[in-house]
Length: 166
Image (cartoon, rainbow, N blue to C red):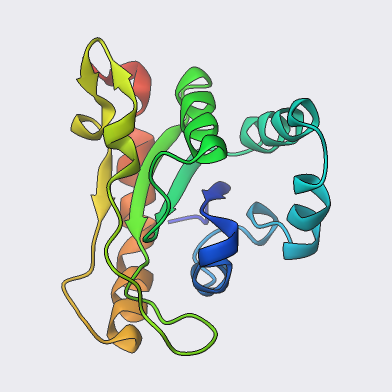
């Protein structure tokens, strides 16, 4: 299986450490990931410039991977990224990362499903989007579980794109 170009969507302030663990697993194309410095620069810009950056990033990717933490659901830019990935007919999947430890070794509470906040034909899009949640509790095992399953999850998203949602 070849490595895929993906766009990772996550709550930067709360989950950047956890997201970097997933981005650095070596399971997706290296140029899928952007540096924390790049996002720091982008988030200082106007809403139009942020949208332009997101749009350009998503156009280059085959799949949107929403990394779901405690505070991910119903955030402005995450909702925008999901809607844009839908418009562009990109694969869309979610991975719960709240049980990965942050930089000080803390895990978070499980966050709400961000796909519950967006609707398609009066149905929550969570009906169509597969989300992976590790059965493990310990961060080390959660990490291994995500690493073992992320490629298959992305492939699932690519074969169940929005254009196939009926």
